[in-house]
Amino acid sequence: MTITPVLDVVIPVHNEQHTVGACVRRVHQHLVQTFPYPFRITVADNASTDGTAGAASMLATELPGVALVTLAEKGRGRALKATWLASDAPILAYLDVDLSTDLDALWPLVAPLMSGHSDLAIGSRLAHGSRVVRGVRREVISRGYNAILRGALGARFSDAQCGFKAIRADVAAELLPLVEDPTWFFDTELLVLAERSGLRIHEVPVDWFDDPDSRVDLVRTALEDLRGVRRLRRSLASGALPVAALAARMGRTAPGSGTWRQLKRFAAVGVASTVVHLGLFAALSITLGSAQLANLAALLVATLANTALNRRWTFGIQGPGAAVHQLQGLAVFAATWLGTAGALGLLHLLAPGATTPWQTGVVAVATALSTVLRFVAMRSWMFRTVTTPRHPASTAAPTAASTAASTVANKASSAVVTR
Image (tube, rainbow, N blue to C red; front, side):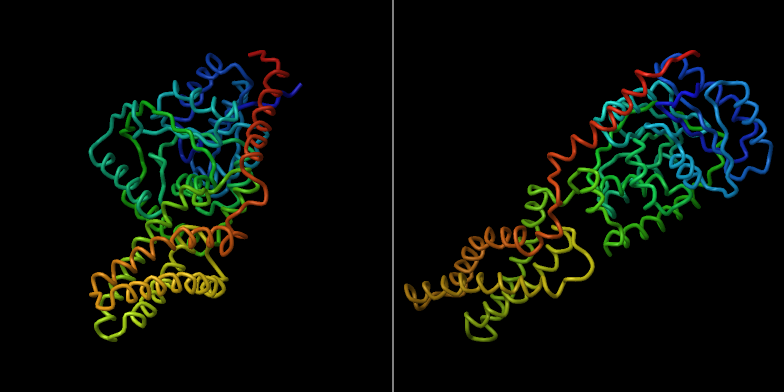
C-alpha cells in the first residue's frame, strides 16, 4: 500500500555527485528519528552534467521514502516550482544540499503549517535567537539585500534567501503560478507575493554555518536579484499581480486593506498634501491678492495630488479608473472647499482685517475637520469596490487554515508508519 506523505522535503541539486549522498542520508536519518508522520525526500536534479542523477537514483532504491525527479533545465526556482506543484503532500519544504542550516529547526519550521497557524515558514539567520557563522562579505551582502527589500518592496520578513523554507500545498498551488523567476530570486518573489496577499509567514531562528565550498557567485546573484526586485516592483505597481483577488480566495486580508493600515497611510498623505495646500495658499494669497482665489487654487492642486497618492499607496489601486477617481475626488474637494471657504468667510465677518497667518490658521483648522469626511468617502465610496473582499476575511480565514490542518491530521492519523 502506498502511503501519501504528510511532508515532502525537496533538495534541489546541480552537479552535486559527491555531496548528495551524505546530504540525503543525513536528512533521512533525522526525519526517521524526529518526524512522526510519513515523509518523502525528493531529490530535484536540475540539468546536472555529472553523476548526480545516478547517485540519487541509487539512494532512492536504497532508502524508503526517497525519490528522484530530473529536470532538463537548470535553476533552483524552476526545480522547486515543478516538484512542489507535482507533489501530493500537504506540507512542502526545501533544504539546500549543503545543509548549512541545522536540521533541528525542521520540526519548528513545519509544525505551524501542519496546525494551520501559518501559510509559509522560513528559516531566518537574522531573527532573534539565531546563531550564524559566516564571513563578513556574505553578512554585509545578506543584510544589505534584506534592507533593499524593506525599502523597495515594503517586505517585513527578515531573511529572504536562507535555503530552509516550507509552505502549505494549497498555498503553493495559488502562489507558484504567479512566480516568474526560475533561479535564486524565486524565494524573494514567493515571499513578497505571499506577504502582499495577506498570508501569514512564520519565521524560525536557525543555526547556520557558511559552506566554504559554496559555488554561488555572490556578485552575479546579487545583480540578478536586484533586477528581480525592479521587475517585481513594477508588476506590483502596475496591478499585473492580482494579490487582492488572491487574498480574497485564500480568505485573507491583503496588507493595505485593513482600516488601521489605511488610516496610517491616509494620515501620512494628508500631512503631505496639507503642507502643499497651506504653502501654496500662503504664496498665492499674496500673488493673487484674494484669499478665496488662493485657497481655491491651492486646494485644487493639493486635492489632485492627494487623490493620486491615496489611490496608489493607501488603497493599493493600480491600472485604469484613475480619471473616475479624480472626478470623485473633486466632488470631495467641493465639499472641502465649501468648508474652508465658509471658515474664511466667517473669519472675515468677525475680523475684516485678519492677517495672512490668521487666515492660514483658519484654513488649517477647517481642512483638519474635513479630513474625516475625506477618509470615509474614499473608503466607503471612491475605492470601495476595489479594496473590499467579496467575503469577509474574518469568516474565510479560519476555513482555509482549518481545511489544511484537517487534511494533514487525517493523513497523519490514517497512516501506518513502518520504517
